[in-house]
Structure formats: structure tokens, C-alpha cells
Amino acid sequence: MSKTVIVRYKTTADRADENEGLVRQISGELTATAPDGVRYTALRPGDDVSFIHIATIEALEGSNPILTLPAFTRFQEKLAQRCEEPPAGQGATAVGSYPATAPDNAC
Image (cartoon, rainbow, N blue to C red):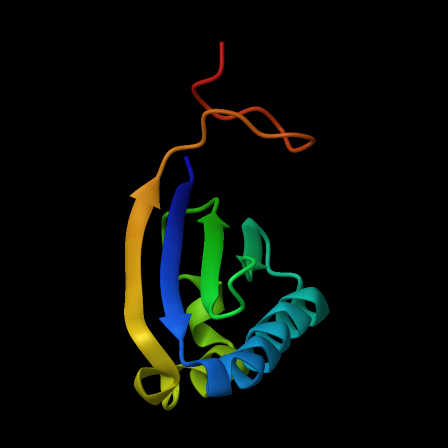
């Protein structure tokens, strides 16, 4: 079974590019370390200050490997100062995905 979390927030206009750079570092470390059972996507919608992170962790036992990355630690530092609207996370259930494998509860 997997756990998916979606986190949304808005940065200030003058810190959005900095935030994007920090997010790219997270993606880079994930690519370099390739932890098993982790899917991660970060999006920057058209308003240029919003960010959406979608993380799916396949194994619910143990810790979330993303949280242990040095890049994630750097991302968390001064996050409050970069944000106009603070991060708000919520769980989600996949109901469809392409080209990834079908969700656990697919027909």
C-alpha cells in the first residue's frame, strides 16, 4: 500500500525562483539516490508563485526518504520567509494514472 501527499503553497514573487532552485535540488538528490518506492513531482503553475508537490511513498513502514535528504533540509530552512501562503498538505488517493501502474483499487 502507498501513501500520497499533496502540498500546496505560494511564495512571495521575489523568492519564487529561489524556491524553484531548492525544489530542483530535491529532485536532483532523488535522481542521484533513487530511493525505492518513491515518486515525486513538483509543479509551478502559471501564476509563477504557487507550488504543488506530489509525493507517493510505496512503503508505509519506516520514514519517508524525502525527509532525510540534505536538499530537503535546505528547502525547509527559511521556508516561512519565502512563503506568502504557508504549505498546506493533504493525503490523496490515486484514482487513475498514466503511464504509471494502475492504482491499488483500480477495477
